[in-house]
Image (tube, rainbow, N blue to C red):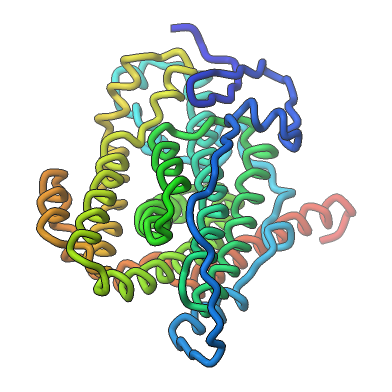
Length: 389
């Protein structure tokens, strides 16, 4: 096995290699297009204007108030002066590496393990970045199509959240990790289907029930287990926003779906099952292992790894109760979830899941505490340098 010494960006169907030490300007649209692949597609759907300004949707207005009050600035709130370990930029435990514990991992020298840690961080944060851009576009469609003015107002706050997340993930990849990957084919297929879909509620179903709940599972794991203080603080702020986004989607669909016909609900059941199968079986990092030169052996080990199974469990512990909550839990969905082996997760309580570890005030407190500790550390070092006690 040749040691992997190249950083790379991988797009769907093609590869763009970056030699060790070479710098790429990721603010250049041509570089981004080369790295991720540009999509040109019409956005299907209609804009619905709401002229009754006397309505008072208390639940949506509460979400809107939270969305206004809990904005944060990644420049000000995160300690970008912190330099992570270049061999492990997220402080990632090796259990997150999908081949960890295998004979392949055991025989690798530490230098190759460090490359894998960095590329795993790059692959994960690249998928998060691509998903945030999808949400930025998708929520714009939802704001246009949802019939409630209050829902449009809340969606505007989420648009700012998604822009901020995309900004921060992009900055983290560019300045702290240095490795990028293209969009996972599984997510790409979901995103293409939704953006070309005129029915706005399917965007909510994809973004807020499937992708946002997957994000909650991933970000929760990162907040709890990553050791780098910048990564932990970042996840604390993102989690606070994502929990609010999921609540918005649940509220919209819980009101809409009881009004639909059996035929309309059957279409949505088939749609969400297709998405669930994709996230369960096809959301994989095969492209990373091929790029690093480990090929079929690593791909097979990765797909069967305990870390992948644990992640899928956490994802469906959130998705299945959400489907039950919004009323998309008929016989077709139950049968499909049973075939996936995840039907039992429908018994979990969404409110209980939302409190652990996603309490918004706790997430903000943790992030602030970690930033303050880092500032104190820097000041103490500066004081020592100045000869002060």
